Length: 572
Image (tube, rainbow, N blue to C red):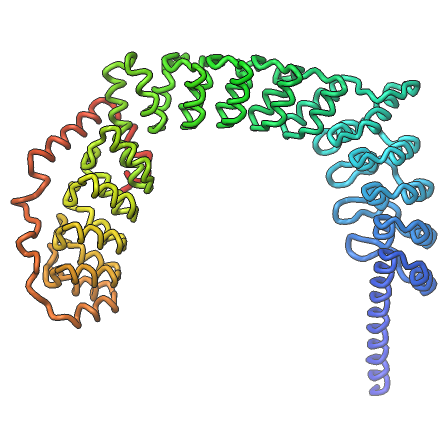
């Protein structure tokens, strides 16, 4: 039994070695077929090496892809599967066509390869031959029965692919075959539905050479597809400037309309294609053309906030007072969608036509724009608002100033601009927060430093009794804590819960802040006389009440929708 078991183990080892040897030979055959090494392939086939291949590839695929005629024949004679598919769904014939190996294609076809087989993208060998412009291969495949009407996953025939790839000889030959007319040798294109479809697609995709090719061979530049859209519509819609130039030079109708009444200019403006709009206007496009909703190019540009396009259209005579079917002007569309910069710019041309309600709308938009620019750190936008008469310390519907938003969001450059313009450094919102409180709350060290340098009250506190030092300690902002103490922050002041900054830091586990505050000697507050108290609350003074009432009046005019769309209205 010991001898028997030992022998079985030996046999198992031998079988394992043979299996490894077999796989090694199969790998060698794959490599040799790919490289075109006829001798090694021949020797491996003598050893009965499998020609089925590994995973999703076979030696025949590799030999066909690489154009090794002799090896292809050897593998076929050895029983290779002529219809085996690789990971793309390609058979050896598809691979040979894709790599333009005509002789290999002919060998495979003579051995019975399926001519109209397609890969996972539904491309046949003829599709690849056509798109690559290999006329001899196209002719051979068609003579072997290739279907010239087969469509791939994009619904394109071989002829359409040849047109898209600008292979006129292939297109001409295939079209003459399909019409059974072999007498003409002229390089011409029959303008049929197939060609029109491709022409529109080429314009849509920005294929300059393809569009030029079809125009040169007689395509009408103003031809429409089944949806009554022209090539110029698509090129303008997608911003393909060079294609637009080609089409205009070829006489394309600039005022062509689809069923919705859109002209190429309307579509270009709708999609913010400034250069296309300029070219169309230079060529004489009707700037005030309107669609079925009575929207003009200016309506769309204003609606979506395309400021440069708005300016361009007005420069070319766009009517700023024209109304759409909802009786809205471009200004009103800009206001309705919250596009503040455009609305402000358009205000001047339409002031004469503005109602009292619209005037208030513009006022609300101006305020919203100013706050938004401060919130996102847009220095030029803030300066523009100030230059146009916006008061630097104006408060919004929540009694917050631009300085509040800039300080809260860490917009240092905007803070500088606002302070230079005289912003109220101690302005308070209903929660008693000043810009310094918000800056400390959000760990904006440089802004805290700037505000303190400009005289901000360091021991100011909100309705919860928290000072900037309380918040900096609470969130563990040690550099801010040190800065505030340097400027006289009272380390002993208590909030309404009777917690000092040190106690707050200890309670929430801010160890570094706790250790540092514990290491310094509590002192009498330097700015005790400047503490914020209810008796001197800015929220009680007449000036701020007027601002609040003003903001309330704006809201009473039905402008609630203007407040809440931007990030600066989120609750902090």
